[in-house]
Length: 90
Image 1 (cartoon, helix red, strand yellow):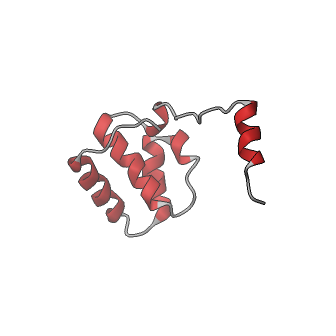
Image 2 (tube, one colour):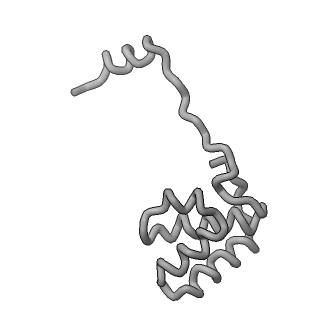
């Protein structure tokens, strides 16, 4: 998502909060779920990096990650796809 880069303070706070759960994923997930239930539905178990990112964004902006627009991939024309496939080595 187009979420802001975390402030150093937000990173410290997110790291400290995640560490406070002592590796207990379920408790950490429950906390992150309070902050952003929509984003948390996309997390895989033990994805601490993204869980911390969820907290960092919240502590930086006061908004959940899911409230930011996700970048959309660039669309290719038919001729671009055909050209790329025509030169592909299979």
